[in-house]
Length: 304
Image (cartoon, rainbow, N blue to C red; front, side, top):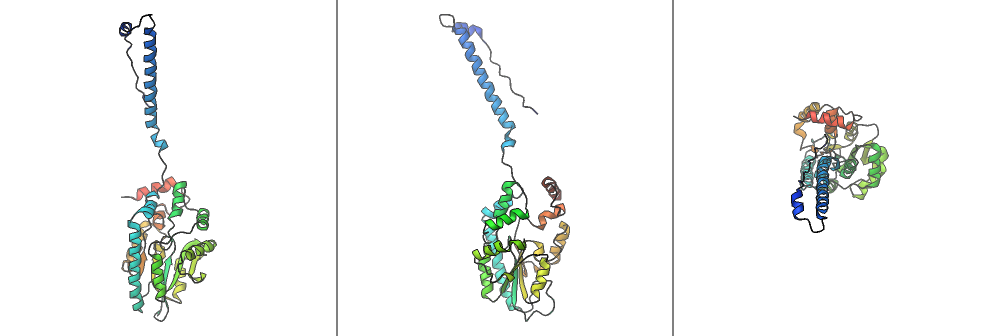
């Protein structure tokens, strides 16, 4: 709707002008010209003010649905406190697991594992490595995840470690525990991922401990590691880091997490990730090809 501009009415009081007309007879016209110019100035000022108000929304910065989550990760005092708290819990549980030969964390571990050497499996992104700077790129571009942009970021950046990660991993290794990392990262990113882990001086004696996506699921990797090691803890930020079946409807995911409620905070250590994960894609059926606007509308309809 076009703005309705106020009409400026300036009364022309000729009698007053005549009273103040200087000798010579030219004051009447000069006073009228001054009044008209003043009226024009005020009209333009009002017009600019009204139009500025109407176009305010067009000049406001565009935002992205991950803005608050990324801001919380990078600037809040609470997030690093939560991360360190979670790793301290993991350390306490690791001690208990080492003392209990019957303890195993994975559903894929079958048979007697008491004689097997101990190990842990940790997801990489948002569990060991902080990828928030990649999400910031997405926010600034008003974009979404892509293999190409993530690969560029991986090659450009050494992601920092999640607070508490290095201390916990060093503690595990010092107590004779083998550390495995697994990730949905493609195997083509092995070089930049390995460089990042070694830059942070995280334990990675050889690349057999780094399990990247090459056609195998995380469940497949858990089963493989369980053949040679007693897996004491699983650490991750997504349900699939612990149990298969995470790529499902939100209600199914919730039921799956509840089914194994006794494992959370014991064998399974979960980290908060409000930026992305299967939880975020479940409302729109993991249809990543949907336009962003439709994805947001489906998420909105999930709210109660």
